[in-house]
Length: 216
Image (cartoon, rainbow, N blue to C red):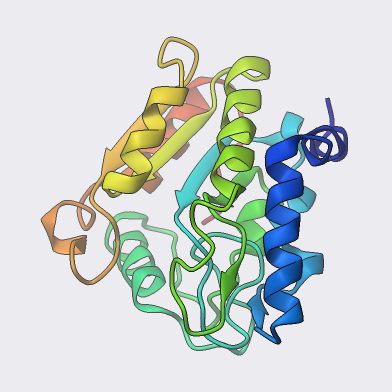
């Protein structure tokens, strides 16, 4: 199955029609929605199903203007690096010898190497964090995780924070690897994310499976 086939299949379902109605109504009310509609599925477009090596699960998109572009934790070039991503870079700098901290928070180069940067919710209202939760996106993205779980093998899931940890119930740990820590946000990064060494662990696991490591 391709992601395009998956999307088309989900779009026929009742929950997705309800989600579309919600999004249409928000637009009719003049509310600004991030990211732009063309980028809702950016993560899927950049990381085909058969290429997935790693899944990094976020919660919902950044709600500031110009920040969200359909990849969890990532922002486009030229946008200020958000606090959680700053801590991700901090962990990389402290643990991965060859990592040079970039000026940009754009993680597209991870996505094209097989890192699916998936938010659980794929849209948000401007300046209104969590405003599109429980509208149907969670069903859609849970189904993405189920498809990966069922159709692929040896995928590494990075679950950061309690929200992401709950998604572990969807993953068969006999087929896949799950690495958990606290969330990289400033509120919790020092309680386990910083020092978790996930990025080195990922590359060790990939190399042991005969796969190319990720150039973080």
